[in-house]
Structures are given as structure tokens and as C-alpha cells.
Length: 168
Image (spheres, rainbow, N blue to C red):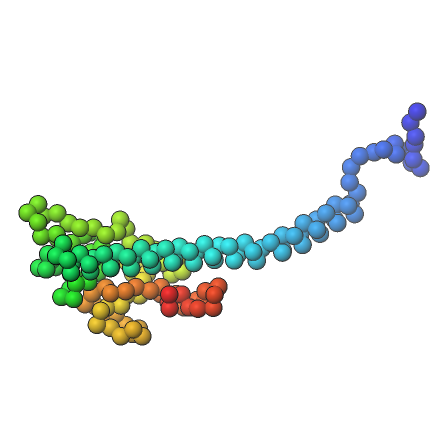
């Protein structure tokens, strides 16, 4: 036998009331507001990891170039290297340097120049980095232009650990 409520409707009706929907919406809004900062930190942390990886890759390539120059694997007369043994530009690491053998082969150190994840993405990757020459001081803000001894980010932003990206 069916029971009927005050207005003749079935007492076991299904569905949500407007109040229940509003409470559920409020709870979901609070959860979304709490999760948003975590998502932003996660994205920033991923960019920081990409920056560290890019810096490590380029610095390792510069060091390998210098070691090859010092070890005679790169011709001393190569126009790609400075008199100190460092590449003249970042592009040299991609295009390669003359190995000085009879075949005329080139030694390449990078497949491509990585992007600085915190700089303007409208510039080519080679222009996104701040370069330091072997002759430049450690605190120099201007590149001497003779060779590429080190690179750093051009970003003025502060990292999650409190340091500046340009100091990495």
C-alpha cells in the first residue's frame, strides 16, 4: 500500500531540494578554492625543474666543449672556440665545432638550445639567457661577448626557495 504525504505526493520521492544543491555547491566551491593554490605551486615547481634541467644541460655542454678543446679533440684553429677554449656562442654547441680530422667532421654538444621557462617566450631560445664570458667577473651583469663561459636565467622572479632565478 502506498503512503501519500500532505499534498498527495509519494513520500519516497527521489531528487534533491534546492537547499541540498546549494550546500553541495558551497562545499565544492570551498574545496576548489583550497586546491587552486596547490595547483599553482605545482606548475611553478615544474617550471623550476625545467629551468634546473636546462641550466645543467647547457653547462654540461659548455664544460664538455672546453674539455674537448683542452684535450685536442677540437681544432685550436676552429673559429667556434675562443682563445680560452670556450664556445663563442650558444649556437656553436648546436652546430658543432671542427674536430680537425681529415673527414672534416664536427663535434656537437646540444640538439637544441633549451628555452628559459621563466623568460618571454616570444624571443628565440638563444636570446632568452643571460650569458657570461670567461673574462667577465662573477657578479657582472653585462656579457663581454668573447665567449660563453656560463649562462643564467634572465628572470627577476623569486623561486619557491627564496632565491632569485638569475642566481641559479
